[in-house]
Image (cartoon, rainbow, N blue to C red):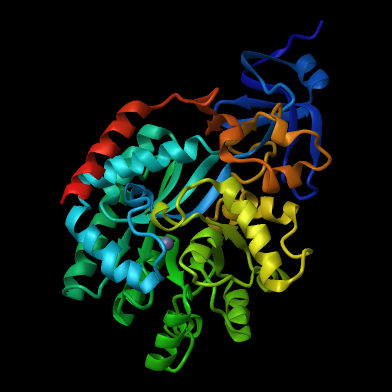
Length: 441
Ligand SMILES: [Zn+2]
């Protein structure tokens, strides 16, 4: 009799959505995890013959799929959720968000706001995210405690204050973060100028130089609103995308959030430079910014991933809801129901997110040798019955609250909807007490 190989975890009785190149779906399937990686994927019967596990997790016929990748968010802004709604972006930023940030955002705000956001993401199927905010040292600490995979970047705004001093301070912080997390496989550091309307040309260029020297991603809000498009055109005579191209900050390591206001030449530039896009449909709808032309971007072969943006302009971090909106917004704005098909949208939230972050060889699909970042959804629920098409259900029926279990880097961080890595009650309590201070200020 053959001896079975002992492995760490087997997730069995699952419908395994691999999101691999051929979109293989394995019914009555199992995923085998050894340390931080996927060792095998197959039918229950075959996996049972080959392996015995220290731990078995029964998916009870539910879907097992790659953890979702949220490529654009502002974690700690969760503490501003619902504080200022129903406003256009420029007014929302200049009259509400920027003054509130100046007054309230500090280490404590960033730490607990990040933890609040991380809790919400863990409970809704996100396993990897890309954050842009302030006091990122605290966001990094919270991410480390959560056991999530995070891209952490100190947001740079140069319009208030001395730009040389701002540049020096932000680079110092970034360098400290790089040093702190150089051996951490879950946390990556990125360079994040806020936008071309809040950062000077000099800062934008210098940050790109720093990113290149250190082989880091360069992440920026781009062409989000008509106002941005018109202002840049007026000031520089070109569109926001053309402007960033002119100053040579666009390349394959640039991830641009929003990309709503694009002309045909802009789309061609994004394609040529291999810039990755983070599409944030709910934030764009809520701030009435417009609808990114994702159909056209797909046609050109531009990598379009999905982001929630911060909770102050969404107002949640549920990537299932984001998928639903992404599909429907693309359809209603083009009057074409064949744009943004469910299967494409699931790829946006998984493998395209991995590509946007340069992680496609490690995450974004369930394949042998990749990192074990996966989620289990409970499909024994009325709103998910019956099933004709799993992709359709993930986009149009499921929500983050259907996620039962989440595994990141081979570690179970959420089990039966309980966060295993930190105390959720304490996070909620601290978040409410910080909000209380904001309300009474
Ligand atoms: Zn944003």
